[in-house]
Amino acid sequence: MESIGILKEREKQIYRKGEEAFEIECEKKSLAGAVSQRACVFCGSRVVLYPIADALHLIHGPIGCASYTWDIRGALSSGPQLHRMSFSTDLKERDIVFGGEKKLYQALDTLIDLYHPKAAFVYATCIIGIIGDDIDSVCRRASKEKGIPVLPVHSEGFKGTKKDGYKAACEALAHLVGTGSTENIGQYSLNIMGEFNIAGESWTIKKYYEKMGLEVAAVFTGDGRVDKVSRSHGAKLNVVQCSGSMLHLAKLMEEKYAIPYLRVSYFGIEDMSKALYDVAGFFKDNLQIMQRAKEIVREEIGAISPEIKKYKKILSGKRAAIYVGGAFKAFSMIKALRSLGMEVVLAGSQTGNEQDYELLRDMCEEGTVIVDDANPLELSKYCLEKGVDLFVGGVKERPMAYKLGIGFCDHNHERKISLAGYSGMLNFAKEVYASVSSPVWQFAPERGKNNIPKDIMGGYIK
Ligand code: SF4
Image 1: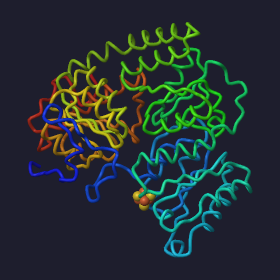
Image 2 (image 1 turned 180 degrees about the vertical axis):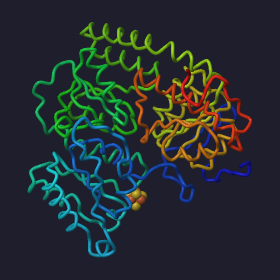
Image 3 (image 1 turned 90 degrees about the vertical axis):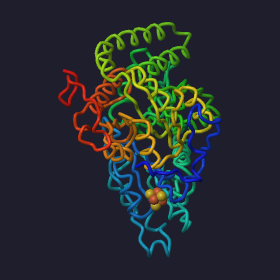
Image 4 (image 1 turned 120 degrees about the vertical axis):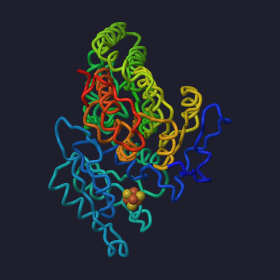
């Protein structure tokens, strides 16, 4: 592993705190051949829109694009499950030569009659950008004939980065927002944005807000419904987590409907509490809301603190690496891992901008490696160099961590346990502990010298 080098063209996307002037390059297209961990534009739009459970999601392109994003997130739904189907126009060579519009229209016609969705999203993939199918006109025709919104998503895979996919999803949602009635939406109301209910997180957060006396008009897009999105412009505040994915829509809604927005994070005790206080502070004319926020914070922290302390005792001094989609999540992760006594020695994101990385630099200790749009070789190199005990990442980082003999916590698509809110923080601590302290790592060649705590049997603290 010592021989792993960094591609010359990527050197400026990696920064070591304290060892060089801060000049990180970011927000650029992935380097060809670098095997980026970053997903394509289409995938970016898919992850944002996918949790809208009563909509039809039709991928216009070859079958591979659909299978790549099939059931891409847990995205739990309390009702319909239509989002979990992965429909595709399955374009073949003949369609590429003669065009795929006819096939797209036929697919929409059949699927809408069969499943009666509340709306349909039609995703453009790379090949659509090349052959130039006019998906807008096909969507308009289907919408007129079927009487539901049929929304094109301009997410041609090659046209930029995953962030451009988020933007394409926001543009599609913007066509839906403002089409429903805002009757009965009260004065103390908000939309939760950038929360995708992968393992039930939206339900936890919604409960906190409702306990504070607030009304959640819509969630973008966890356990999402077309009707709720269409009337979301009646809410008085947009509360944006995962700003990379939803900030564009929040800004569009601010311009068009004068709805202000707040940026928050629901991961870790510190940021979760700050989110509740910030939202309560927005509705400052109602002092009861702040009062209830304080009660929730006190009760919830009181409930999890004794257990967190037990895990902290064992995890203190362990080292962690973080590689996530949006940098905002990395900030919360650093705080959450610190509250467990752990040190973050490698931090990176797929879509961070310069301000994000500046903030990351300020939060990190000297010597921390900060990396933009990394690849597995770079991540492996720094994990070994820094003697990392835990990797917090997503589905693409999991095999890398296991091969290196490093504990792993999925903080992205594949997790089945909620990691948001106070109960989520406790789940996070349990998962980190179980993975970092697993006796299995002593058999990994790179990690044979690990000290395994004596009081564990591969599970949670007894
Ligand atoms: S849209 Fe393009 S880059 Fe994305 S999965 Fe399809 S072919 Fe691959």
